[in-house]
Length: 65
Image (cartoon, rainbow, N blue to C red; front, side, top):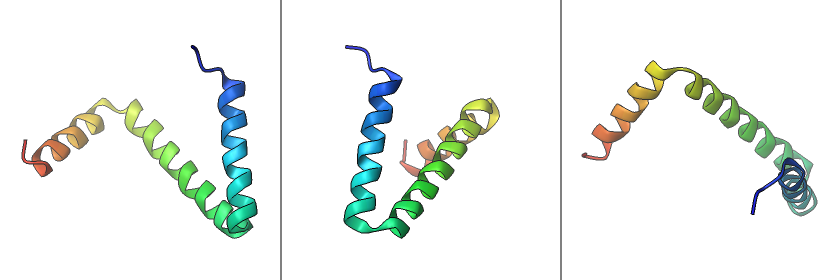
């Protein structure tokens, strides 16, 4: 089964709508802001091989591996 963009968009819209209704608009905006920031950091890390190697090395040292 392949996941289409429409299905992902509908699922994300449903989750955001539930958070908006259950927790309020301020909490929904805060969560959306953090999600967007995380997405931007992830895109930036994926585009930089040197940073990706450093993060991977840091995680291996921190985990004792």
